[in-house]
Length: 293
Length: 214
Image 1 (cartoon, each protein chain N blue to C red):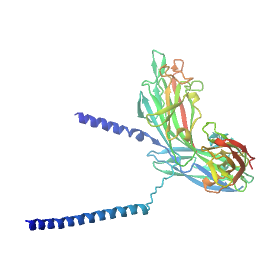
Image 2 (cartoon, chains in turn orange, red):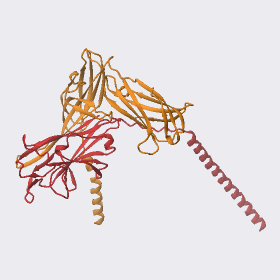
Image 3 (cartoon, chains in turn blue, red):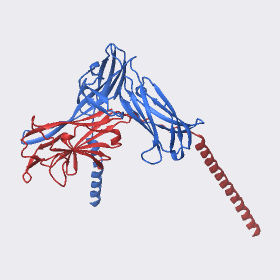
């Protein structure tokens, strides 16, 4: 009897492990989260994406466009704004179909889009296509005081529309600082200011190399990626944690402005290279830094 | 006797020699196996590979009704018809229920995704709402039983609360919704009060939207 009870308790415990999985509600998803398109002025670009329903229930999905932009600082954080409310909105250039979709269980729905660039268009424009679905609906009660919430989820696909032949990736890189880390752990911290002076978005991939007079690399590392719209600013921060032998060095900083193009598989570069001389003393003390060139 | 012993010794000597030879052969064969095995281990290259597919933007949402510490799956966030607590003159869910919404993102594409919580007023009409009567708690969950309370806000102040992939790490976001109860041992969020008798009878409905952006 006790054994049966133990088996029962074990079975209940084992079954309970699977309850959260059974209740998790997967949601429809789009097969592309970012779409980068090159379109010539006065021309149109066509494309298609697929909305998939991985659940055993029919899902009603509403699709709509909004604006977005990168928040200051370059971390990649974004803000979403109503349709055509910013100067860089691509919303008026984009049409898509259907605007509402009923996706059967485990089914797929193709979403077609057309991007039409005006004849006088230059630079780049941006938009976000949201697809929204209701997860739970509050059953309303008319008796006494009752309260409830509808729960919806929406997922964005970001559009980056570059006007072919007119988009420019340019940037200012300045104000190099090389100093002991604020953590006081003996490491060196490199910081640089970055400003997007072009007319399109820039995602950077940057690194540094510290070379001694024999051309041997004594320190190397990567900077954080920065995400900016035209006019956007951010700061690169790189860290070197080990001791560097006292002496004279060349610091070479390489900033690839074309990471977004490479990620999209439609191009690369340009790359900016900056150099300066650095003299390092005992215990990673910075004796002198030259002009960044 | 001697002959016999000698004979026997000779006989035994032959057996022992045979046995010795057999043992030597076995050792040699064993050594050969070991050596060739070792050589094999040193010289052969076994390629091991696995392809990890890219999973992007998969959002999972689980809604649970919670009574005490018991979670049960739910298909709505409904506090039902509220009951009057005659001692404190406040309206509370008859079974003291609250709700947990677990939001997880399945993505290994390297995208810097963000989850954002937005809400629209829980209202009966243009002047009466429950936005300051609902607690919203944002938890960073490490697993189903271990979480860290990150923000504890009124429903009114829970608009545009965002979490990035970096902030949630390998865990997920859990959001609790519960009506204010005025219990000092389980305090309400700042700005939240229980639903009092001054709140007109009627149906109060609102909405919450969870946004996933790349």
